[in-house]
Amino acid sequence: MTENMADLMVSLHDDKIDMIAATSVLQQQAGDIRQTKINWQSYMQSQMISSEDYNCVSALDGDKKNSYLQQNQAQSAKTLLNLLSHVSKDQTIQYILVMIDDLLQEDRTRVEIFHDYATKRKESVWGPFLNLLNRQDGFIVNMSSRILAKLACWGHEQMPKSDLNFYLQWLKDQLTVNAKAYHQELVEADAKRNALANQHGNHHHHGHQPVYESYKEVSSCVDDQASTTSSSLKSLPIPSNEYIQSVGRCLQMMLRVDEYRFAFVSVDGISTIVSILSSRVNFQVQYQLVFCLWVLTFNPLLAEKMNKFNIIPILADILNDCAKEKVTRIILAVFRNLIEKPEDSQVSKEHCIAMVQCKVLKQLSILEQRRFDDEDISSDVEFLTEKLQNSVQDLSSFDEYSTEIKSGRLEWSPVHKSAKFWRENAQRLNEKNYELLRILVHLLETVKDPLVLSVASFDIGEYVRHYPRGKRVIEQLGGKQLVMQLLSHEDPNVRYEALLAVQKLMVHNWEYLGKQLEKDKEGASAAKPGAAPISGKA
Image (cartoon, rainbow, N blue to C red):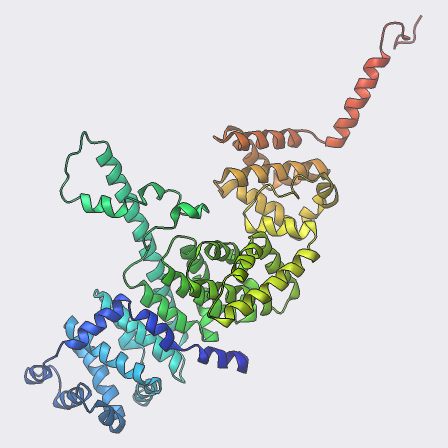
């Protein structure tokens, strides 16, 4: 990581984000836990803790904790880690974790107190907190995670690889497990609602009614939550557990460290973030997860690979829908990095084209009309507008076509219906081991959207029509069978385009057939009564 980038990562103040996170469930519960008092004396009297640990924790829990900590750093680390290992009561563990987190939050250099103590003892500073991730209590688990992130990001010692992979996998699972659980909850609520609707009259079913009420507005959307018709899904509740903001907060910290970024990619972290962003989440979670993508794009290699996860179309959709300035700001910052950071200028160009096709220029022109307090927004809007307008001027029709296919969002843009385009470019679909054709075939197999299926079928037919050996290529890629299956599709437009494509696939050479029809026509007119017999005999 360059020096400038390192400076930038440090300058992203945690306190700013913590002000936002202060409303999170974890922070609210921490506030309540601070108000409780633990009877440390009873722990000592029952010999659950030593007198040494009692004296230390009492001092740290008192008014003079700062001066005590200054003079007794090793003892403080020893006592707090001891207590985590030897106390079993949830309420006390919660209190100790809040104490540790507060110490670190007040002065981030204090992470070294724990690192130094563990190093001298040849113990793992990570172990006690990683073990707590297995507890049942949600507060204990998520406060331990928060402390782990601080120890990993604020100290001179980085988290070792095996612990790092375990921790990042755990964070990722916290996002996905809860999203899945939420989706299942919606499905079950929908089933219950339908069952209730089938009952006679307006019978009151005690115990069920609150569930129906809470999911009333979304139960009809369960099956198509992943579709791109975002306007009907704007008011969905948050698909997450109550601690998702804390999980996002830990990721925001971890992904500022370059070495941790690749570890996150290796546990398939980017596609997890993208899949959650493509569902409907509240703006705070949106902001946190887009922030994670933003810090990832400061690495040039990751900035180059990022749109393979389809983040440009998804962020363009959020930009189109969002009303929150901070979400707008962070998306524009990601877009800027996707153009500025890649070292391969061709990749930057492809990213520009992808943004143009996702109607980002239109959004930028709307944003130009608005007044923003944040100068970064105005600067990014100006930068992106200039870059995208330049890319439009340089855009060849094949660039445009290629980017559209790779986005998976096919529509009847002019390039599809242009005979000139197909005459000049059909053969180019063979490039990079038939990359674009493979995508078209994959779309036929996996996509439900009738528009995408119609356009993909049409394109396959046009490729076969204009490329002499196209029929064989499509058969080898499995496209012919998929197009034929669409002949019985429920949508009439899909059936129509599939039928045209099948006709083109059945004809060996489209142009040759046209010439044959002309010859047959001429032959028929020549063989009129009075013409010489074909045999040549008298």
